[in-house]
Length: 121
Image (cartoon, rainbow, N blue to C red; front, side, top):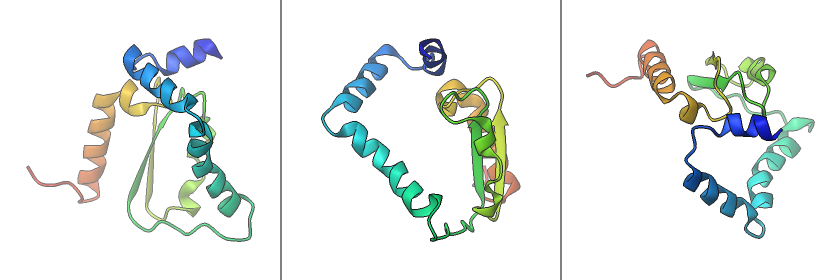
């Protein structure tokens, strides 16, 4: 797992990783960070409350080398988002914007133009 974690964070400078580490180990911080996910799982996971459908155009960028959230999780989200475009990025980890900033920026700009959302030059 350490080797995978090293691959996942290779584009993070050591001082940023140290800041993130300090934030996670602060008393109560990790619990607070996870409560967001717990709340959504409890509300929408297997509960009787259906998740509301997102109606606005949405772009999902997914790193295929993500060791935290497998690529299969990028599939099947159309029932939750009515206008979903999913782009899987090969060779990119969980941290898509750090691993492939140029690709991410170009993908967002291209998608926004296709959807008529881009601001003209």
